[in-house]
Length: 381
Image (cartoon, rainbow, N blue to C red; front, side, top):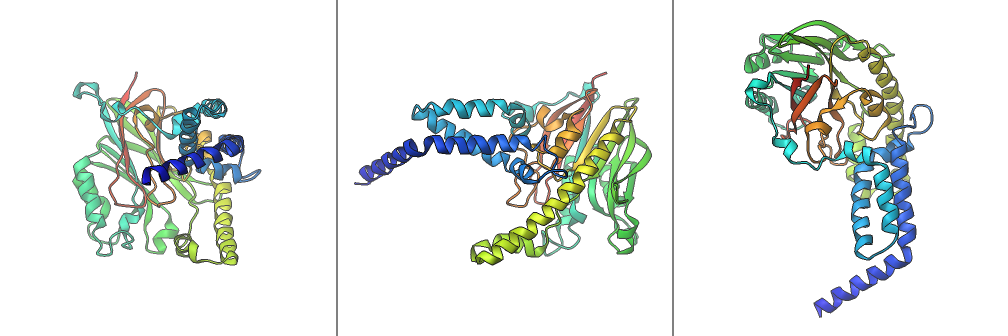
C-alpha cells in the first residue's frame, strides 16, 4: 500500500510539472537573470531590488540546479533553457561555489618563501558576551590564534581595552610572536569606552600606516606596507557599512510566524529601509577604496568585511582588478556570516596578480558572528 501511495504522489507531481513546467522555468530564468544584473546596476542610483536578488543568488543557484536535474530526468526541453541561463552566468557561479576539493589541501613547501595570512571580524572579541554568556569567547579566540599561528593577521571590530595594564593587543602579539603591531581606531568610539578599530599583527616589518576615512569622515579601515622576503606589499584592512539590524529586527525575523499582516509590513519595511541606506553608503565607500588602492606602488592584499555577497555591485567594483583568494584556492560555498539567514560570503581576501594564493580556508569555529578566513601567499616575481 505504501509503495502504491508513494507512486501515486510521484505521478501527481509529474502531472503538475507538465502543466506548470514552462511557467516555473521562466520564473527561475527571470530570477537568475535578475540576480546577474545586481553586479551592473548601481543600488545607490536606481533600486536595491537587484542587489537583494544578488544576495539570494546562492539559493537561486541551488534551486536552478535541482530543477534542471528534474527536467533532464523527465526529458523536458526547458532544461536546455535553464542550463543556457546558468552557462551565461558562469562567472557568478565561479565566485559563489568552488567544486575542487584539492584546493583545500594544496599547500606551498617550506622552500617556496610563502607566508600565511588571516582576516577576521572579531566583533569586539565578544566583549558583551553575545556568544558565551560566561565570557569565555576571548580566551577561545586566543587559543584558536595560537593553534593557527598566522604570520600576518588583520582584525576588524577589534577591542583593545587600552586602559587595562595588559591589553588584548599585547596578549595576541605575545601569543603569535609578532613583533610588529599597527592599529587604528575611531576616537569617538574611544570616548564611549569601546576602543574599537582595526589592527594588524605581523612577523614581518610594517610601516607607513594610513587611515581610511569615507566620505562622511568615518574611519572604515587602514593600510600598511609590509616587507616580506625583501619585497613590499601594501595591505588594506577595512570594513564596509553594516546594515545595523537591531535586536528588534532579529526578534521579528525569528518570530515572523506569530506576527499579523500589519506587523509583517512594518517589520519588513524597517529592514528594507536599513538595507537601502547601507547599500547607498557601501557603494560610495567601494568607489573610494578602489581609487585609493589603484595608487599603490606595490602589490596589494585587500581584506575585510565587505558586507556584500560575491554577486553584487560593490564586490565587483572592488574586485575587478584583483584575484579572489577563495576562487583561486578555496572550496565549497565558503560562507563567512554566522547569522542563519545570511549564509554566504561577505568577508574576503583579494590580491594582486603578482601574488598567488593556496589553501584558502573558512574556519567554522564559533568565535564571532563572522568566520575567520585564511590562506597562504607567495610572490610570483
